[in-house]
Image (cartoon, rainbow, N blue to C red; front, top):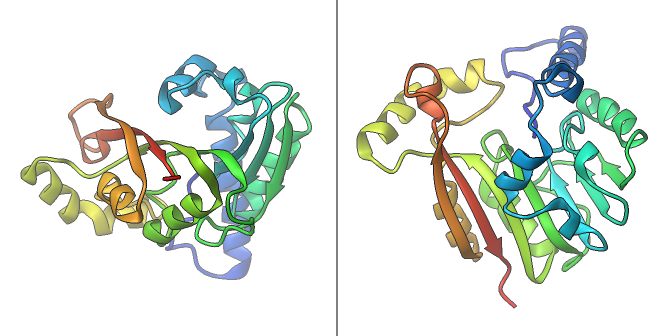
Length: 230
């Protein structure tokens, strides 16, 4: 679960300072000690399985951010996690030393996964595809590294299914990206999953945010289980 540094941040020194503060903000926001992180039960609801089921499996977490999910993985789970932002990754590395699961971290983008074909049983994606530069390529990479019949467990905010809502997202998208660290509110992730060649075994649309600005523009969320054919 991550956000990247906003595009309006310019200059190496300023970007470094901003990046460090942005990672700190994310860490505080998602710290379970502050009561602001998602709970284990809620994370299990989002990915559609109990985390204990991942024990003994090979798991790839996309866009780990500061490692907020790490605390919920248990002994016996081998978790490979990627995060392109160096300041987020620094905090994730610290978190990885504080948990019982085996966490292996890589600084890499979702579009360029450095893993062999058919490596993982599961890929976990929670609120990441909205901000990657090329979601189609990222999904193709996730499919490539999954074993045959391996599962992508995905939770993303997505494009409205009704035309009026979708048009409103298209209109607000340039401003949203500028203020929202590259976040695109209007991506049709379900369509991209199908076009990438995944078999969708479970699809559920959720609207947990209130229908008021600004949350209304990112209100529809997709919860999906997508399998690599094989």
